[in-house]
Length: 78
Image (tube, rainbow, N blue to C red; front, side):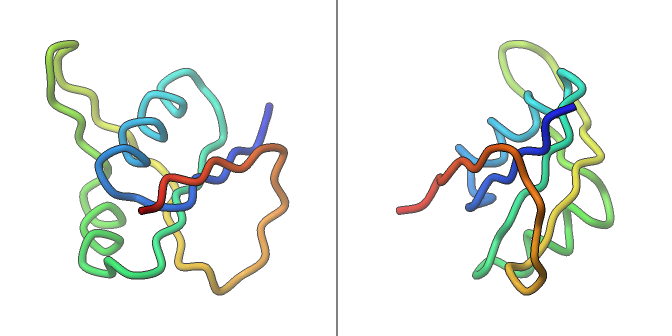
């Protein structure tokens, strides 16, 4: 199983991470600035609601304060 880190848990990073985790990948979202969003995902999971229906992902989310050992990194930052 690949370990994927996605830097930026906004709309695009969360969408990519949610769909990758639905495909059984080990995904960690990393969000350094939007701490309320980090807490909400930790408490309730990541809910994606759109034209493909609803999908609830219990995805890992982290602040960038600990080392991660990953296979791939995706950057979704402004």
